[in-house]
Image 1 (cartoon, rainbow, N blue to C red):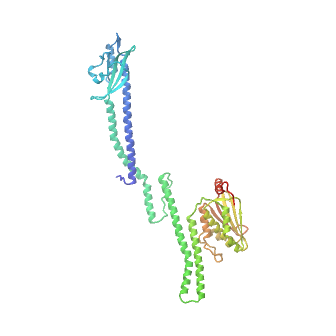
Image 2 (tube, rainbow, N blue to C red):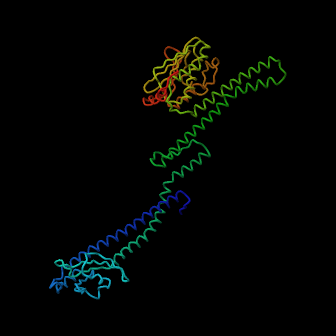
Length: 479
């Protein structure tokens, strides 16, 4: 049973309706073509017979005088297929059977005029008549008539119409059934998709359709659906990890704040004790604020914000990071040295890249020697734009080279002396990788630590467009 409210039913009925319209059009075209073919064939045969009759009768003293041979040839030409007659000048029947010549045909037996084909209608059915004048030496001596009933043509048209009228409904009914079966088979993956989506909604996001390689609409739909599930699962995993990390990292300072407050409330204290407790609470509140900002930055970096396809001036990004952290460097007499090898532009989200450059430079200033130096180098290498930040500190430990870009990972050797949340390089990694780049940690042979941010470099056409956008309008003057 086909339910027209379902997609399967609509497709099946649509198939059948399209086929029905095509069959009706084909039937009408067939009937018209067969009718025209029959009529043209009949006209050709009538014309041939009429031209043959014109040559039969001999002329004596300006009149047609048929003999016995002419009568025999007349019978052979007309035969059983047609009816015919030859009329003389006075409208006298020379050859033919008077009883077989209908009155409407006799009216055409007047000499003169040109050859013509005439269709006559009447109570006895339609007639097709070939009218051919008989001329000798430019004089009209009579007329030859050959005609045939149109009933055979009509009968053939009716039989064809009846055959189509019986066949089309049967074919349409079969198309509905066959279309339903084909639609059911074709829509089976959609049923599986709906079932799996329901299960995923109720249980977990780890399952996939996994229909394999199918180069059709359903295959592409299932592939897109699986990719959507990948993104949803990643988003939920980021949310779960953010919640777990936040609760874990926030628990310690909140516990200390609560313990300090409870301790002070147990009994009356000296003003110095209250001051010490308030200072401790304020310090841990500052820690909570910094940690919250780092967590939000990490969440934004993983979720991705901004246009990762922007064309940014990497040298300008490095210069802005150095200017922003110049007070921190000056407090420890650290020199921040910038070297830019020409106009180096990369494809990245500008705001995210600024945050990443500040994070890496801040990390370098934290571990550089007092009175030492931090180098920022911007170069272009093998189709990539590189930002290298190097310090002269103790360098990365073996564990740090492997785990420093992980969230909340901190080296045990420097944890006590270098405050922080362990999110800086993790934020940098998330920002850079979202733009199609990479972050490399290494200890150069000269000592210290080095962080290399590698980003896709802008192509030549993009550079020309970016420079054109930044150039002043014609006629402008710098102040």
